[in-house]
Image 1 (cartoon, rainbow, N blue to C red):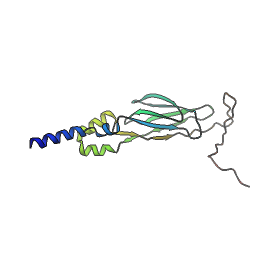
Image 2: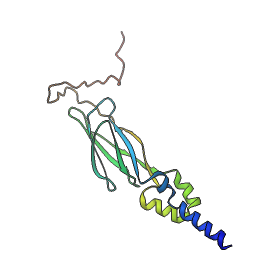
Image 3: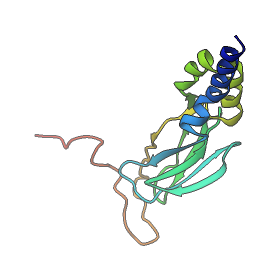
Image 4: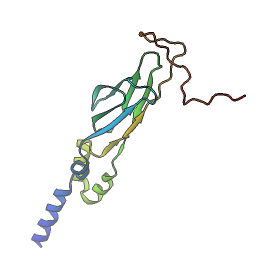
Amino acid sequence: MRKALAVSLIGLVTLTGCATLMKGTTQLVSVSTPGVTGATCTLTNRANSARTLVTPATIVLEKSTENVAVTCTKECYQDAVGVIASGAEVMTAGNVLVGGVVGLGVDAATGAMNKYTEDNQFTMVPIQGCRTKAGDKVSASPSWSRSPKMT
């Protein structure tokens, strides 16, 4: 009886924090601004402080229950503002069943029970008639917006 109890306790301890062990406490996410390369994006939340990247890019984020606020800027484009959403990691459900409250507590404390959207796209709209400092005119009518009118 003692041996079975000891094996059960060892199994429980090794399975606690399953998402922490299997998925980790950080995640690689991609950020892009379709049709616009070289935009500067600032990502902020309390877990990651302010991080800046130039699109397209991938970045490692500390997992958290908080969404990540994103603001992308580029000359002659309206700022793109959005969110990288945080959701629950699928492994969390299994951890509740197998690891119980201890495993859930470990995953919650480390952020491992959370997962960010992996592919994040933020649309930037050109400012009509704007010229960059280099004198280049930005097209106010991107090719993806509509087909030319046929007569």
